Length: 202
Image (cartoon, one colour):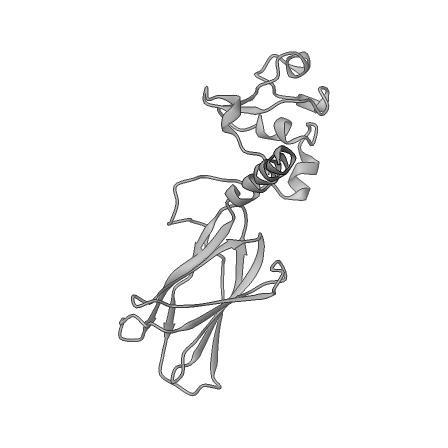
């Protein structure tokens, strides 16, 4: 009995960080050309980043929809409602826990007609207050530090590494590993005087 409880407790501890990991979202409102909200619109988000390739939701009574727990990648969002033109938005780039707001305006028309809009992906998250930066592979390779996340994170203003010996051996600048001299050290990040336990590694 004790062994079974231990196994269940261990499984819960392993699953909890995955469940708590915040991923990207797409949300918005669908209206007609008069500005009235449209409930019952089928909204599909498609991307190679999704295991199921396509995920769909229906707008609620206020014309709003929301996709949650989306993996980073490029998405296409398609809006369909009988009696209205199909509206499609391509090139929606998601990263981190960014929430992209994609609104749509449907006009009365033939079902076979599709309006496709390709433009810049939203860069401002109007749903949340968190600030985030995603470093591309090219940027990471160009930065003259080790490629360990602590060394990269310590380059952010107000962020230092919690390690005492290894990081300080490289520099005395609060754990900034210039040139990668410290290598991959066992450390965590501290932001603006916070606790090293405040960070979450995914």
